[in-house]
Image 1 (cartoon, helix red, strand yellow):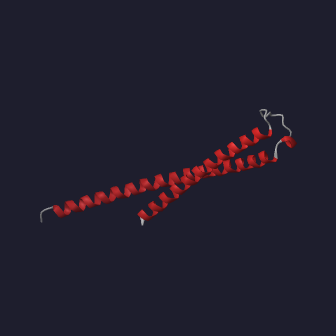
Image 2 (cartoon, rainbow, N blue to C red):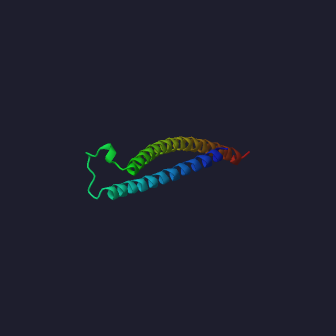
Image 3 (spheres, rainbow, N blue to C red):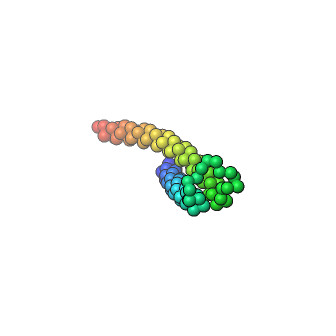
Amino acid sequence: MILYFLIRLSDQFEYLQEELERRREECIQLRTVLANASLDTNSQPPTLSLKSDEVPPEASELFAAYETQKSVIAQLQEQLQEEKGRTREMEIDLKTEVDKLSKTCREQQQVRSKPR
């Protein structure tokens, strides 16, 4: 039963790590696309004094997507940290249980090996 939960936790942990990596890659791609879109629309470097009507619509959409991805990644990182914490706690509990069972086993071995 405990082994089942460990395997399930491990699978969830791996899934969250894979999802986090996918989201990171998507963010990198979005940053690249955003940078390319900025370079394509203006051959001169972007300035902070751009008016909202001067920003290309693609850049706005990409920036919104980027912000969304950023929040998703933050949420996934939080979930991953929580999962790591639960896994550590469970690992400690299981090690304690294994130690108790080992001690019980040794005691039973000693009782069995005593001359009658």
